[in-house]
Amino acid sequence: MLRVEHISKSFGPTTALRDVNLHLRKGEVLGLLGDNGSGKSTLIKIICGFQKQDSGQMFLHGEPYEPKSVDDARAQGIDTVYQDLALVDELSVYHNMFLRRERVHVPVPLLNNALMRRETRKALDDIGINIPRLDVPVARLSGGQRQAIAVARTVSGEANILLLDEPLAAMGAKEGGMILEVIQRLKEEGEVSVMMILHNYAHVFATCDRVNLLQDGVIALDKQITETSVEELNEIVVEEYRRARQAAIAEDTAARAAAATASQ
Amino acid sequence: MAVASGSEVPAQSPPAGPASTSRALGGRALKLVRGFLTLREGSIIVVAIVTTVYFSANATNFATLSNFKTLLPYFAPLAILGAGEVFVMINGEIDLSIGAVYLLSPFVFYKLNQAGIPLVPAVVLSLFVSMAVGAINGFFIAVVGISSFVTTLGMLFTLDGLTLIISHTAPVPTPGTSALHVNSFAQVFGGGTYSELIWALVIVVVLQAVLTFTRWGVYTVAVGGNRLGAAEAGIRVRLVLIRNFVLCATCAGLVGILEAVRAVTATPDPSGSNEILFQGIASAVIGGTLLRGGSGTVVGALIGALFLGVLHDGLIIKGVSANYLDLYLGLAILIAMSVNVYVQRVRTGSGLG
Image (cartoon, rainbow over all chains, first blue to last red; front, side, top):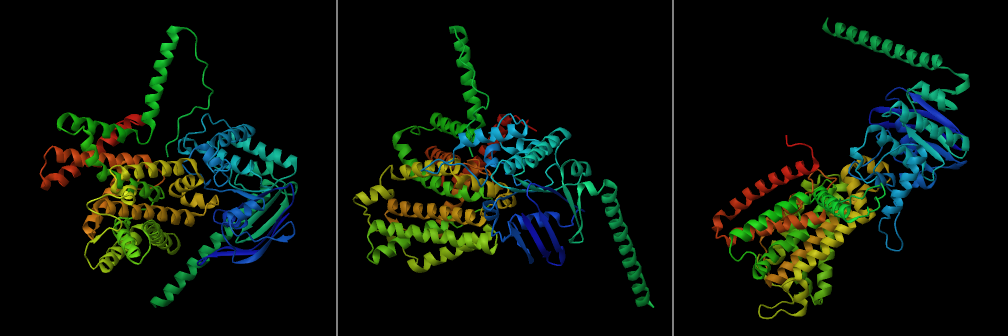
């Protein structure tokens, strides 16, 4: 459905993505794992049209996919829950819910607040998150409620590819469970594909069909969830730390040696 | 943005019986009062009313129609300037060039009219020039990435200088006006007694509606409240910024022409326009618009301007010497804003600490 080929992206001297290849099948839930700073969020932001890759191509339904903007990506059926949630504290729950997708009256394009409030209530009920008042600014809500709004906003849209960047980070067990249930339900309906960044392996194994592990700017592992285990994933991450530490020690030793040579 | 406090819970059906009806009425009145105080402008309204009552009781001839007419040209222009500035300030930016646009636009109007363009088209073209200034401000801020403070400060000096050059530092008679007779053009564009008031009220109502009931308003708040988030949601942040600077400059250009028509002459006096600038911004800030962005109302700017007008006028009627006027005005603003903050804390129930 979605294919990403040889994507690279640098920010100044920092290389975030070196050569990323991945694909997302229809109706599949793909878990994207990786260390902090491994470039997961950058990859999501490239796919959703917020940033542009330095090189590489993407294909959607077999056609070249070059989103010009977030709007453009959304028009092509790709929508995102960002790590920072992209909520505006000062706006009401329903204005946030419909940010950039506002419902307006015709012919005079005034906001149809009643309709937005109603649809927001329905979308939140579908997920099972209770937010008593929809006209309060989201600044007054808890972290979990805010995250629920961000997820509900994306899930209730028209998109058939959902990108979720740590959708459960600020949630308690109960709310998180509800979100996972929603994703499970979407999976059963089979119309929507989901790519999800997660840190909690329990969540990964509960929800995902397949996992990709992003390491050093490339996909270091691509396995069906049934073919891997928490142990294997852990081992890879631990191995990565071990290597990083050895590299640091080697560098340190080299620097000391150089300093010693210089002082003689 | 003033959000009506509608509850999601369906209203309870009114209870039967006369005894409970009166209680329900009392409850509704209490709800109304609470609803009023949760308005963002609630506290400044209280402060403005207190100020008005004070002067009505202590200054003879304050609460009269003729004095109200004296007050109008002082507060109506500030209300319009403040209304435009509110949009920029909700974006988290500031426009310091409104005074300079206000200064320039009557001279553009004069030159265009001298070139043979009829009055009303000349006004419209002058407003287009103001819009262009706003667009240039917006370009430097949103595209080049210079801070709005610096950009509009540069624009302030540029336009002040430009006005001095094209006017040869000499006042000119405002086209379409005469000191002896207020014709229909002048009646509409600032010369009529209530002309500026009507402009101010219409502009405030329209812009408040834009802020509360349109996408433009939602995006303005979004860009000011969370710029990155707004961009991630797909809002074209640059467009929103430029649009609001254009709106702000247009308001300033209009006020410049209205005031020049009212005064019958246009005077190239940058110090006067700088004072207008600060009063315009003060109106917005006093009206509850935050300098850090994300929050503010146009109606608040109107009330802020009214407060400044009442204060200025009241002090004059009380016979305060001209030398002391600014001092008292400044102190009164500080006191009034302190009271404003106090009332705000009471109404949001966040304690007085």
